[in-house]
Image (cartoon, rainbow, N blue to C red; front, side, top):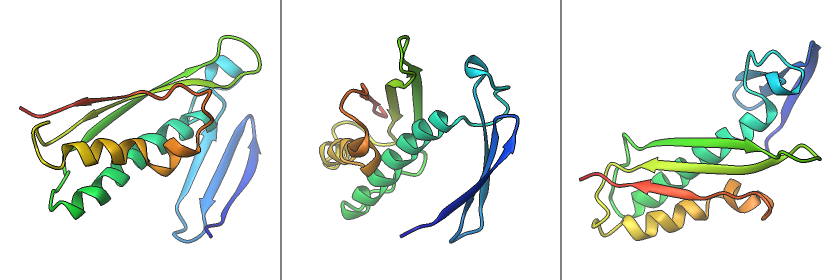
Length: 136
């Protein structure tokens, strides 16, 4: 169990605290939804969670294969729905891998990416493709 606490600070800004570490982050509503876009929006954090979860889950799986994924890069493009109700419609992820596709660990790592807890927790209505770019 992990406790996250927070407070609404007005002007569509919130602050959240990760109780175990004491780390904090702030959020703001996006410009296209009455905010100033001065920080991550709550839905930006979902996209961030997906990218970091994929990378972390792959790194855990890579350890089992004696592979270090240092240098792995990711990008998540979040698209909101055009119709009501407002929701995340698509989270397209790209992963730049520091190993070639021919590496023996490549296939299990692709499986790990699709099995990360955030990917599995998202509603099936959210399109969430993952594209891999392998090193030469």
